Image (cartoon, rainbow, N blue to C red; front, side):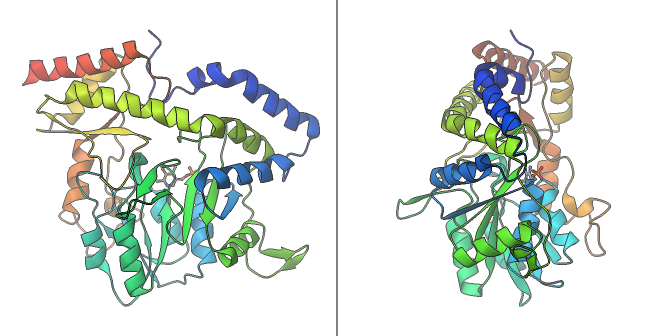
Amino acid sequence: MRDIQMVDLRAQYDRIGPEIDSAIKSVLESTAFIKGPEVKLFEEELQKYMGVRHVISCANGTDALQLAIMALGLKPGDEVITTNFTFIATVEVVALLGLKLVLVDPEPGTFNISVDAVRRALSPKTKAIVPVHLFGQCADMEKIMAIAKEHDLFVIEDAAQATGADYIFSDGSVKKAGTIGHIGTTSFFPSKNLGCYGDGGALYTNNEILAMKLRSIANHGMKERYHYSDIGVNSRLDTLQAAILRVKLKYLSGFNAARKNAAEFYDEAFAGCLSLILPERAAYSTHIFHQYTLRVRNGKRDELKKYLESLKIPAMIYYPGPLHLQEAYRKPGYDETDFPVTTALCKEVLSLPMHPEMEQEQLDFITSSIIKFFDKTA
Ligand SMILES: *Cc1c(COP(=O)(O)O)cnc(C)c1O
């Protein structure tokens, strides 16, 4: 059995190495490292895969969020509602641009932003909602878009963990995560479902004017050569990463299907284990399992994690602390009793190894070890 990894990028490279090598070599030979033809080709291919009008590539998923807020013209003091249970990048850009961060609890089952909590957090100053499609499953976009429409708000979807997940509307129509709100953002960080070999990111929109604005802001605010209509930034996907992503995009559906199979194996193996709460599947979304995240009951999470470590089974806590208690984000009025769902999840969640190259032998070892742990400790 191979050593078990949370994400096994080496095993993946062993599968697709020759194609990756030749893609890299062709960029090296062209020396078009910035704005090479591969960048535009990748944007076109991703646009087709996503079923969206515009894809704008950029340097990383955090930049993508920042560009989205800048393009929507949000101003210091405007309120942005987002989930307290997410990766720091989601809230960082809101704070960085001087907007007022309004955190709300997620749903305990799906880990995604609670629609009722969003409703309760609305104020006359609310300008945008940022749902995060956490761990590979969509937030409840239909309801969020209805709130946005009613109150004239923008919706920025943070789809960094959900490239390829489908949202299923109540009329049966389907859209890809990230293509439903005014702007969607994603990351190609190596461990994401569609990851490159460095940093990368992209934005999605169906709005032509927003697309032009995003392109301009990502490129120093340039309208035409050396004419600057916006204050912009320098945020580009480089050609090498685009070439790598073109290869990996072809495999994405297969990779996501392999993750789903592994998740189903975990589900079945743990079905009778009363100490574990399995990741809930929402009826309105497919799940591409960026993470397979359990909730461990009875305060046993840390003990289980240590036991797994002793067997060389990695497991991670995403996320260990609520954002409102982080030193940089603490503010008067928030304390340990706020956000009860986030606080409980931070003590219970444990993500198991999850990637497209999981071997059956590894899955058997992980699941039987966890079941053995609870047989002993129950
Ligand atoms: C990874 C991630 C990001 C940031 O992406 P980078 O490319 O690392 O900047 C933002 N939001 C979420 C939810 C993420 O998981």
